[in-house]
Image 1: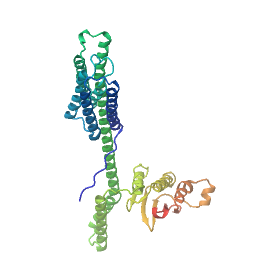
Image 2: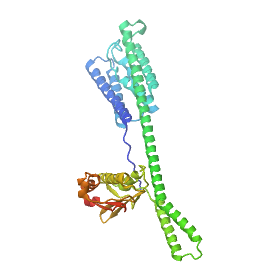
Image 3: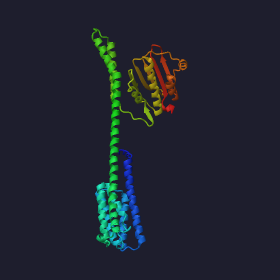
Image 4: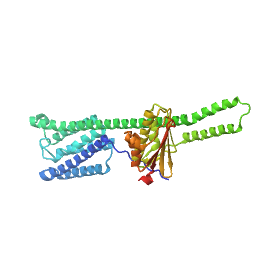
Length: 406
């Protein structure tokens, strides 16, 4: 069975800029080729029209192949492109009328620039400068072939020649510098993205490890400590009750199953548009409350993102109330799915209080009513509070699952 191909990563800004540069070089080729054809047709005084036609045909075929194949700038491709450009310059010496190469725009004055910038973009600034220098030398050779004595040329002719050769060199060098800057930027962006991904993965592993260690401490280790303490007590008794030994054995077996379940728990893949309520509640446990907090859940409990956030905010408010008012020594949060609803219970062993909504509203103590009950009722849920003075407090939040709440 063929494996599915992973989607290609989206290109970054530097890669997109490099692609735009390549398209720009290709567009320059077609513009230069069009200009070459127009100049050959308009001037009408070419010395060797057939040779000019062959040169245009070869250049057109080469440009068309570059457009369709979009090859990488390998050594053979670069060499062939430079050969085409140099050939056009040298052929201009025998195609155009004598004395016209370099004095004004001629048959192949623009197309060779594309070869210089192609070298710069593909192989760097030094290669672009070298290609531009070779094209400059070819331009001088074309003038000699065209019957121009460079040594006896006038100042305007020499300036025109120098300007043409310098244009080739500057075009190749400048584009090469830009291409290398884009390549370096792309490399730095990729390295930064990979480093950020490694940091996120490490943070996720640390978070999972902390969550696992906390759950083992809160359940398995405490139970094993109790088993150890009770076993030492029983060791001093001559007649050990069989029921007590069986109870301890069952407790140890239960903690073994719990520990095995924690160790073998696989990472959960979130359905689209959902968040894990368990992960959100475990994040609350990492907030370092001034009193011990235990978080337990029967599974990841996937909820719509807004529902998970609102329910977590309600639990956070309940924990704040415990810290500020309950004088509790510990608090526990338990989440479960029950009959089409998500149930979250927040239990503390604090002082408790007399729960009377009307009295709380009259006293302007609206923390439970607004921040907790209001949030849950917006999700079509309900809140149940069980408390009494000296008996601790349990707040139960019940919210319909996604299938019912929409």
